[in-house]
Every structure is written in C-alpha cells, then in structure tokens.
Image 1 (cartoon, rainbow, N blue to C red):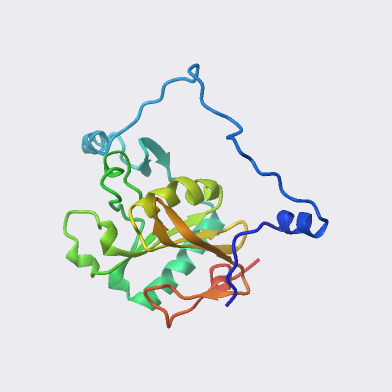
Image 2 (cartoon, rainbow, N blue to C red):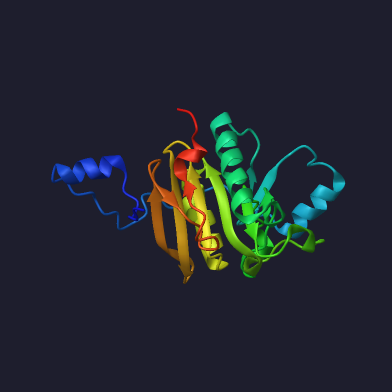
Length: 221
C-alpha cells in the first residue's frame, strides 16, 4: 500500500521540468473593513428556528457560524456516498455506522458549529445515543464526500475535526477519484494526510484487517 503526501498532477509535471512551485507567504486576499457584515448563527438560534418549522425541507449545516446548504447533490456524489457507506457497514457493522448525522466537536467550537458528516463510525451502537449528539470520543472515523466542497472539507472541516481530536477523517474526492486520509490530530491539525488513488487500498485504524479499495467508490467511469 503506497503512502505519500498529496501532490497534484500539475505539481508533478512541474517538478519533472525543473520548475518549482511558488511558495505563498501571505494570503492572496484579506477581508477589509468595507466588507459587508455577516450574520453569525449559533446552535441555539438554529434550534429555535427549526422549532418554528420555517426551515422544513431544507438541509442546512452550521459551520463556524455560517449556514451551509447541503441540498442538491449530484449523482457522482450520491454514488460515492452509497458505495463507501455500504463498505463501512460491512467493515464495522450497521449498528456502528450513521449516515448524515450531527456530531459535537471541541467545546470551544460547539456553540457555532454542528457538522453533519456524510457518515460517521461510532465506538458504541447507534441505539445507545438517545437524544445527544455523538461526542468526539464516541467517533472512530468521519467521512465526507466531496465534489464542489473539496476545498472546504480539506480546510475548515479538517480543522474542526482535528481540534476535536477525531482520530481518522476520510475525504472522498469525487472529481479527483481518490481518497484523502487524515490521521494523527495534534494542535488543531492532522499531522498525517495521505491521498490514495484508484489503484490503492487503505485500512481504517479501527479495522486494520479490512481494506477499502478506493476503486470501489467509483465503479464506473
């Protein structure tokens, strides 16, 4: 099983030609005082609105005070989610795998964030959670299926999950046809990030004898 840091095809081509990537030392854009103010939501406010029924039929996710619309998934996203979810059920058992469920994260992030990953693997059986969200120490793996949300999932969500100490975070890159595995959270970031392409397999930390073939998430071209 190959393990290597993420490198895009364009980066590899540049290295072959002797062209080195440019290091960006400053953010290319910064917010200015003229930016319009944004409403930052809290979980308490969201719960109050949900109770009114005004958000019925909407699928919203609260991330760092912003409401993210999770509606309108494209077919490759749905297929990748379905096949990966079925494999997780086979590897861990259906009673330990939840699709699209809210979770709690680090205490400092909980007031303004309530992620709803595409799937989570629990340490305890699902029916042992009656009313509260699973806590970070209840989780062994979190999965996000990414197409247009790839940058968001690799940055802001990865930071939230790392700060919570979630031991393993998988991002299925639908467009790039690869699986990006995050491990070893420390100081608010994952210190091990490895991308596996369609020819490779990876075993979850919590199920070392069960290998996931990345190609299984992309059965057809």
